[in-house]
Image 1: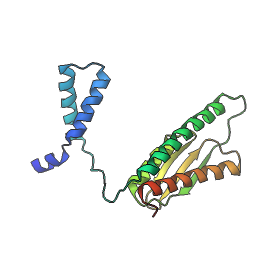
Image 2 (image 1 turned 90 degrees about the vertical axis):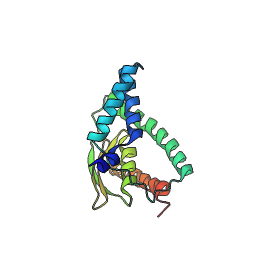
Image 3 (image 1 turned 180 degrees about the horizontal axis):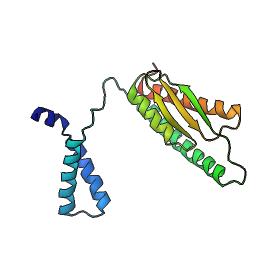
Image 4 (image 1 turned 30 degrees about the vertical axis):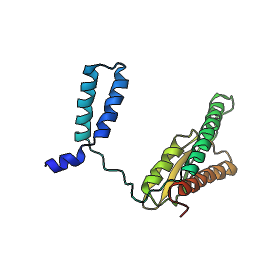
Length: 170
């Protein structure tokens, strides 16, 4: 019983949860620190998370930095496009649900790719089929075949970037 308890306890998670509690309370006091530590400990012990699989994950830091710079630029342009679509007087464009295959072999990398895609306005991965390595995505602007092809190309580009960053071009 105690060995299982020691495997569940993650002190850095307790520290992080305590920090988040202090931010939520808006004041650093002994009472808030003690309450944050107590709540963090209870949460970590009652709701354990599995360890993050880290074996075999190598990161190409230069490609990651380039990806992040491009991702932030895409975030700005996608946000502007969505704002324009919502504020213009024309009717809202048609949207689409598409199935897109993914070649990512690592589930952690697939998760990171889904996060990067979902944080961009205009498209959302609504389902991830791990067995078939396929995403179901919702595209906000799919008026023409070119719009759909462009979004599929964006997903394929994201996939290539993730492979280059995390899987070493396999």
